[in-house]
Image (cartoon, rainbow, N blue to C red; front, side, top):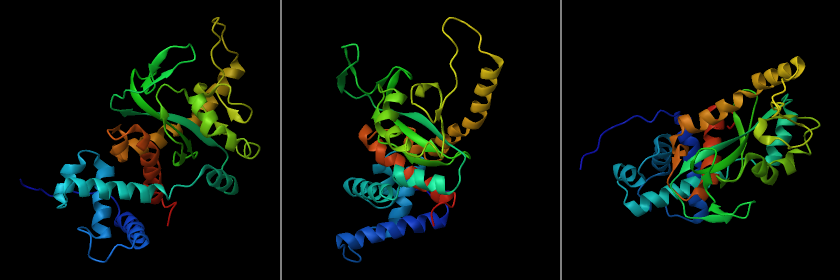
Length: 274
């Protein structure tokens, strides 16, 4: 077996930040100095390389001199430590109001997963695959996100099975909290959130009878789309730069922590965390 060099294109400051978190965790656990195969800095490099490129944990770990079991243990430890740094929804909303943001964008993302045998009963009384998304025609896990007007994600929800619609997931994980802030901070969303309630601004859908929308309503929809489009940038940052979220081969329940980790990495790189 041969190894070869490659480049990890992340700031050294980000590696150092994660290394400090890992060192703090080792102290909390009472890990003896020199008892680990990798220093906190090298473990941070290993973890960030996995987040950046995804791929085979065992193969990546071998390049760092790690056994299969140790590679998975180091990865899972790093995921847990990094995910803990993500802010909760109340903190995010309060900070956004304090910062005077004009609005936030609410959007959902379906993350590809491996086929999963888990069923549930639909609203029509049929037994269906819980993680199968009719929208993408594939097995997915869904997350909700709140995104700044400039496209930087601020918060992500717990994962829901792909069969759960955005509005249902939002009612479970988002709307109950944000409703207390909507007087000061409106939320912009797409038509998938129809029925979200006052304070959540969505486009007016085209009438099913074919009636043409008025000029004023069409102008409103166009303005709303022009403000909301940066929500796509938020998910592009999450899945484009940090490829681990492109296809999750772990348990789909792990998407919750993975998304929170990626959130922290993005916010650090955009100097929102020091």
